[in-house]
Length: 252
Ligand SMILES: NC(=O)c1ccc[n+]([C@@H]2O[C@H](COP(=O)([O-])OP(=O)(O)OC[C@H]3O[C@@H](n4cnc5c(N)ncnc54)[C@H](OP(=O)(O)O)[C@@H]3O)[C@@H](O)[C@H]2O)c1
Image (tube, rainbow, N blue to C red):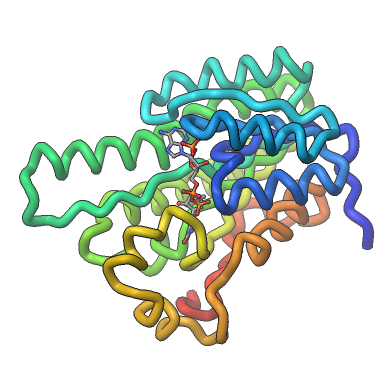
């Protein structure tokens, strides 16, 4: 089976990140024109856009301010003239112990919800409004095992944000199927990327590895092919689904 995404414009938020950059590379290798969103990693985003070619471009937006999602979506449309797939991948994983000061706790909660959920919601709003006029489209959410299993004690906000993302995806799948809009969740367990550096530094690899049934920790390369497959349209009748990629550390 050959997946051909030529002619498709795909926005990947958090494009230069650990999982994002492999998603971007694999989508571009399948022929897509990729809009690479970043917040702080301008140089990495530029290099990635240049490296994958195929007309890829980078776009900056700080998604801790969710209204920036409106501008981001508009800039991508203006640059490429169309949009076929939105990949909501940008995210933060902020440790926030429940005995810390309430102001610090709330600041972590608010940033996590803003980046992981509210911005994803804003981008979905823009995408749905555009896709309805354009004849359809696909949305792929990078959520987490935490949405279904729950997370560790210091990560209330993260689990809540990813649970919200799953509900968001299912709502879009139910509400807009007749408008030819499909929505999917990819739910990884731990994946070796910078987002879990703090957790590994504190707990070590062993704690994570003990939960897995496989011998190796999941890599971004184990997640990205599912995104390419979902973007292709070959999985459209699975709209509303959530696909677990967690090395059997949690089975629903
Ligand atoms: N790695 C895991 O174990 C794991 C497991 C389950 C789910 N996930 C999910 O996978 C997604 C990608 O994570 P990753 O592992 O690739 O982590 P990562 O390497 O840290 O990448 C995170 C990405 O999110 C972007 N981002 C962070 N804060 C942002 C903000 N305020 N505004 C806009 N963008 C922001 C970053 O952009 P800049 O660098 O430009 O700031 C970066 O590209 C996340 O949604 C994460 O929750 C990861």
